[in-house]
Length: 46
Length: 534
Image (cartoon, rainbow over all chains, first blue to last red; front, side, top):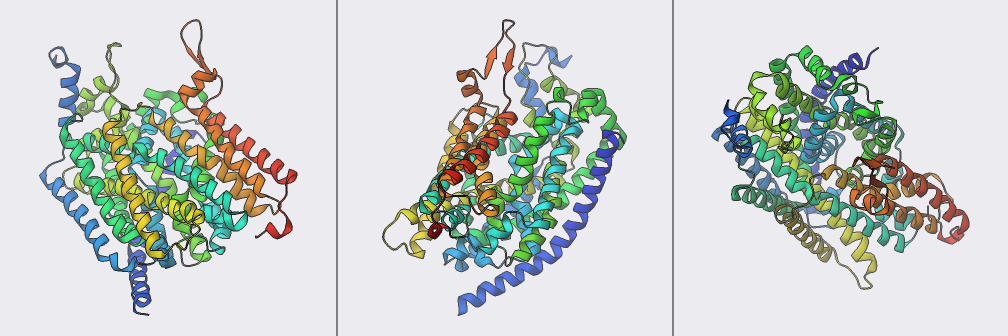
């Protein structure tokens, strides 16, 4: 395998993985924000 | 024909003005910045306690953790220097991205350093030094950390401004740029001082969403405009095999560079650098930390890989695309008496021509957000170290939570003033990458060894830790003026500069010396049994 072919595979693989991760983090990260704010609010009320 | 009429300065100005950045893009940027400010104001009421202010109450879930880790580490400074690396080194630079990703995955799978730190429930690395060793080591570690860290971020504002100049076409010597920098800094200071870590994490999430999709679409557009094969063929035409093979020293890398990257971009970047570690220590559990690191391994690769690729696209665009031909004269002047334009400008200038309006505004907003998130994280990290690890341990009287938050806020504002002074008024040397690597190395070469041995070798003693931390000062020999002064770099009879030891070699030697001194110090003077706390 040449370096050029290796970097082509790395580039495509990392970009694809990042695209999937971006969708997951966007959706599930919003859920985590909800939990965080809820937890902080509860602490504030105690 | 035009070049015969216009001066180099006029050519440069004309090239800067050929940007797709318009009013609609400016509106997108302003709306985004106002949104960040609103978040800071909204979460202010939660930032009352020190644990909430610098640790967000340790309530961060794994997915939000990935977003904030990415938001912090994908800073504009990283983007700019990485693009420069891709521009000069081609695809060979990709090895750094691969190393960063694999090392972060390794930390996630094994919990290397960060797992034990989270279990000990410390909020900062110097706090660990006191728990493991003693108070003087904590204070020394804090001082070294702040000294290196504050010096390290001194040029961030300047580099950020170079991106804004490249994308928007604002005259680099004009007053407008200074006011843009002042405005951005004030905005960061307001929401960081008000909301602390909570607002930093929420704005990091927004930045992640904006920047990740902007990067993906922008990269797709660059490939579409230049052509997938042309990018590789063009790189080979300009850089040859060294544009692909990182082991070729003539291409600017070589084996010592690769090994140095395994330590710096790999293990240190993920497990020792305080801004990354401070995120890990705010997570709700060790399990969440490890999950965060496993997913963030993609981000740690991406934060280098995307900018490298954009730098490579800029190189190919300037050499082979018809619209980029005017820039070729600026970056690669035929006349040797003409000073080439700093290649830091290459990526933003090319981006400003490739990306269409609106998308350019979104990506610019994301990049400015990246610029701001790095600033806010660094401000918060260094100022909390000053409060928690230097001032508080040295005080004999009670140090209330309110006073700690107030001092942290004061330090943030003080650092803001320093960064502004450094960037606007100080005319430093242009070779900023070396400066950053060396200043960062003052802290991380010693801290890496002390943390690693402190966590995994029970016999590490306070004297060993002291010697290990201080050995990081040897990194100062990586600075070019000091290298010249002590004869590590000299001119031969033909006037060529000869470097006896490169910065990566000095870094590797420093790490080696730190290991030897830490082990020797620990063996010579072990801590008394009652002093061993972990």
